[in-house]
Image (cartoon, rainbow, N blue to C red; front, top):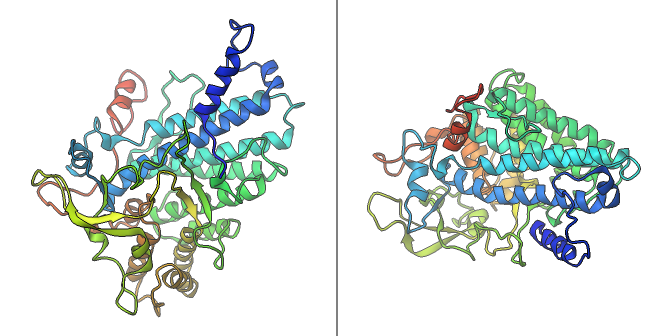
Length: 471
């Protein structure tokens, strides 16, 4: 597996600079001139593309940790500090100054990195990077921009988010509404589609191994279409402006169109897709959710009782491969501060374990959702049974008694197929099923409907014309 590291590359640059005779002449790496780009454009663009991918994988573990606790999938029992659990579960209003307001700075740092990357692409002389190479690079960047924004809006919902990145980082940009944010994301994905289609045979940089099979403009477009299908499914289920109301067929038909251009393959490996990758190599990034690194992450105690059973009475195969039992329950020693559980994860066994961004199994379930709400109940049933049989080892079902029964079955399959990948909380909210999440300590717990805007963000906006709805 080919690994890369931004810090490692930066260190190499410093070492090389130290060997240079003219040590007082230091290039402006943050704002390279056209002449500098003309001399080493490939290295500079690769460095910046690495930065986007690196920031994205760092954000992933924070997102999965937070949404896992909000969605009653996981707990982080860091025994010396109970706030890592209580600040996510105590209510009714989350503290905007706590870790529960996280998942903000990371994505916006990535978005700034993407903004700078695009500026560099614009600055590279046409004699160095031709029209196709620039289009490919822009298609990559706009797709990654949409990915980062999707996590921000799916966790803030009615608060909305800022979507604009100003050339001057000191300039405060306004919040836009939930619907505007989702529609902006779709606009970026559609723009990226056009760019990737004009992007020629190859990117002017390399992608890491998590995009194996999706690492050319044409194949990366399938990743782009998969993300577009996911966002359009969110828009459809929420009834975002332009979708005709919650669960209307309008945007769900678009989901089917998107999936037809994605890497969805009913007969292919269910785990095929795009991944965040990690490594124990020096100066690289490890998967901080890994059981090899910490025993603090445990599964919610409902994960066992809720697991489907196979015909022989054994547990669903997804449960068997992703969950293990602990010899003794784990929780905080202080009564009332935790929910003891003897369930833990086997999902990310090593510090180098990859995490799915989006995979074939999830796309098949997205198609089941879209098929059902466009009236193709037989197609939806076929997709649900594909996952039940091939992923869970379960018996197929004969049909759905009602729309409510379909949503219940869909969410069950998504829960175990996409376990601890950052989906359950979003799924229960977009289908108005947050009240189905367990509340284990009624006097202390509540169900989170959204993450707050961090205090630091509000303070920075206090004197601006755009204070923000969450402040």
